[in-house]
Image (tube, rainbow over all chains, first blue to last red; front, side, top):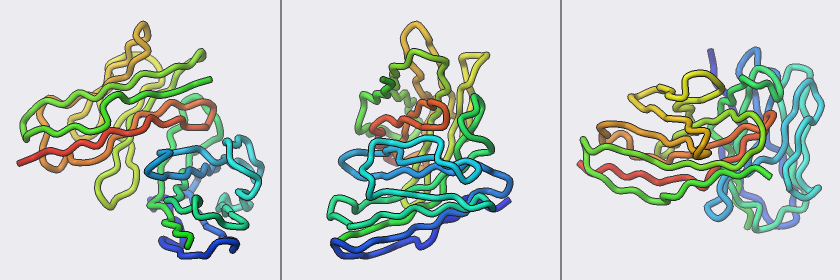
Length: 115
Length: 111
């Protein structure tokens, strides 16, 4: 079974631009979560989607948004990019949302550099 | 609020040495705990998980972890490490689909 895939793998943008990242979950998985990984802040939860609905949200500004499609694929969008948004953005999928026995499986990430 | 603490940020050890990485959590509800590993240039991979039952959990590649509720701990162990265990290790707590990660421990195994 194919793992979680994320596109693109690398992105370079300039301040003020916006960016869209894509994530395809493992086949059959219905929940998709997004995380930001930086050297200073570590791994931080952005949001989780299940059945096209945002179920959980982390402590990030409204510039960070996402959505999920009917095939469970997900996108996240960051508008008005800031230098501090440079990070590795990780997508994880699991069978269900918030289930007590869920395990999240991670993709390779998208490395975003903001200049 | 829930939190996860990993006390060792960097660990250097020789091949065949034993490894133990500390993880403490703060959470008032039922805990689901994980250890993930990130090898150089690779994505986060699940090493093992604890949901309930036997507090001694065995994972892949010879790793195990012990859940001690009274100490709010979930320490990771491996009796004999190999050079290929060089990686960053993350402890995580699941809170209804939201993973709270520790700051990670960078482990370097020297030949």
